[in-house]
Structures are given as C-alpha cells and as structure tokens.
Image (cartoon, rainbow, N blue to C red; front, top):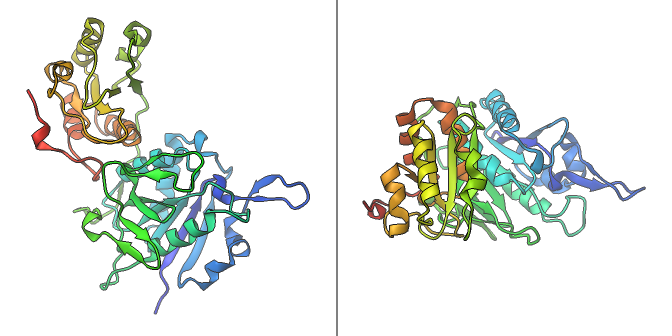
Length: 349
C-alpha cells in the first residue's frame, strides 16, 4: 500500500529549536533532516517531506503576509500530499489557525498546527509527542481512503482542537490550549479517539485560497471606568473599517452617551462592529439586559461564542472579501467555517 504523504511546514517557534553543544545557544533545526533529531519518525508509516520558512519566525512576528505564505505553500502542494502539518510558535498559533481556516475555502484535507512549550532538542520536551501525533492525524484516512480530518486544526498535549475555536490558555503548562465553547475533535491516548460528529465538512469540493486580509481592523476591550474619548480614533472610518469589541458577560457595556455616539457615527459611515464576550467561555446575548440593547438598536453584530482570535481574523477576512456594507454584515453574522455557534434563542429585541 502507498504510504500517506504529509508535508511539514516549519514556520519557526520553540518546537524547532535545538541547543548547540558548544555554547548551549538555541538555534532552529533544518526540518529536511528532522529524522536525525526525532528518529521515532522513521517508524511511522508516512512519507514525510518538509519545507522551512526562511527566515524562521517567532510567532509574535506573524502577520497576514505570513498567513498567506502558509496558505500559498499548502495550495502549491495540495495535490501532491494527503495532509499538512504546520509547525508554529504557540503564542499566536490560534490566530494563524483561525486565519487559515477562513482562507482555505473548500478544504478537503487536514491542516494540523502544532508546536511545543519546550524545544524539541531538550530532554523533557513536549515537542516530540506533539509532532508525531500531529503527523499521524494528518495521515489518518477513513475506510474509503479519504482524509478523516478535513479542516484546519490545532494539536497540542493529547488534544485536537478546531483551529478557529481554540485559544492559548497557559504560557507555562504543556496543556497550553483549550477550546472553551466547542468539544475537542480528538483525544490521543493508547489510541486516537475521534469525535466524528464534531468534525467539519465543507460542501465545496475544490480548494479556493482567499487571501485578501484587510488589516483596518481594531480590537477594543472594555473595562470599568473606560474613557471612550481615549479610544476615539478606533471609531474613525478613514483608519478602521471593522471594530471588534470585547464586552462584559453576555455582551454588555456601560450606557455611555459617548460610546453610543461613537458607535452610531461609525456604523452610519459604513463601519462594522462585532460584539464578543471577554469571558473565558459563553456566548453573547444582545438585548438580554438593558446594557446590551443599545447594540441591537445601533446595528452592532453579535459574535456569539467567537474567540478573540477567530473574531479578529474573521473581521480581517470579511473586510478583504467585500467592500459592500450589507455583505460584510451578512458574512459576520453567519458561521462560515464552523467558527461559532449561532443560538437562535439568544435573539432579544
């Protein structure tokens, strides 16, 4: 039987670092020769190839241009490989995975992001397990010989998450990621157990790469005592076309006249505003309380249970897809890659 072919795309990050024996300094490994550092890979029934970003990037340096580079690499190699593993720094991995999920329309193969908290060249590294299992998942096929996972996902510390549903939760624990509002896609124990009913399936069979991210996007997190005059520039349509607001609880904000006027003027000028909760889990229910009814009156869009990472990248994606105000609102209001759960019972006038 032909071995499944998996392409490793090394962008940078902790997972790809090893120590120089002479100085102890960390330097990036060439993943073309990854078998020298992880000989266990030789025992996998997978044909592996690798490409390296030059230069490699700390994930804090990632920009939409780098998301496009990852997406283009996948597109150029799409017909030659059965799956893809993207090695990426953990700090902004959830942003990149969310962005790629929106970019890769009609994806029918696995794109698995992974990384580590400790360099792969250290004795206690979590990188080896993350890498090996991510490759196994990327190569997994069903009884019909089709990929089992057909979406962008994140594998970390024995759990597989939907890429646009997860967030980095810890800077120190191996269990660095969590998915607050959506069950894990799989868990790795003695066997890898997939939650088949949670896997995303696109009804488009041809891969289309959409890479027009518009960075005229802003993020505002509310806090008690906030002076909205300080953030007035975020409501300037000449500089910001889409604003994500992290509100309290189920989508609430202070009944502040300054905020009302800023939102009203911004939306009247064609700006779009997306409301997400700053809570660790849960969903926005605009209008449930008087402190969120203003958003319904002004035309603010509910982001339901979007993570911050998914909300920001979705806003960039939607702004790049169309300049039409109504089309932007429509795209933001629907789940386009399984990134949010629309609860019809949460509509309140």
